[in-house]
Amino acid sequence: MLRNGLEPWHLLIVAIVLIVLFGSKKLPDTARSLGRSMRILKSEAKALKDENATTDVEGGVTSGAGGGAVADAATGATSGATHGEPPAAAR
Image 1 (cartoon, helix red, strand yellow):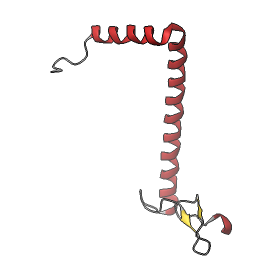
Image 2 (cartoon, helix red, strand yellow):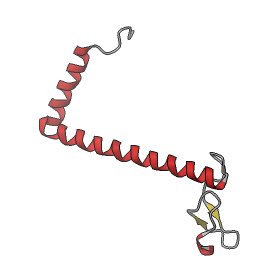
Image 3 (cartoon, one colour):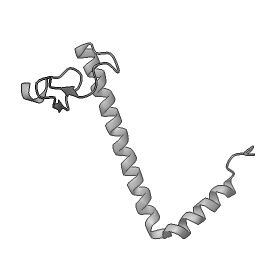
Image 4 (tube, helix red, strand yellow):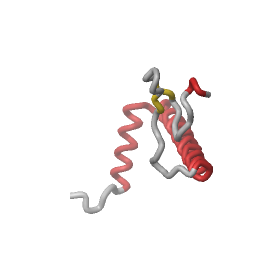
C-alpha cells in the first residue's frame, strides 16, 4: 500500500491545502507558536529530568519510586509534595 511512503509531490499537495485553508498570513504565526511551544516543552522536560537526576543522587531515590501526592493522615488532605517531602502543614 505505502511502499514508497511520502513522495515530494505528496508534501507539495499538503502544503497547498494548508495555504488554501489557513491563508498565507496565519501560517507563519502558527509555525512560530508551534516552535515556541516545542522549545518550552523541551526545556521543561530537560529541567524535570535534571531535577529527578539530582533528587536521585541526593536522596537515594530510584526512578519511579516515591512519586505522587502525599496524603495527610489526620485530615485526609493531599499536598503537592513528592519524593518524600513533608506535607505543607509540616513545612
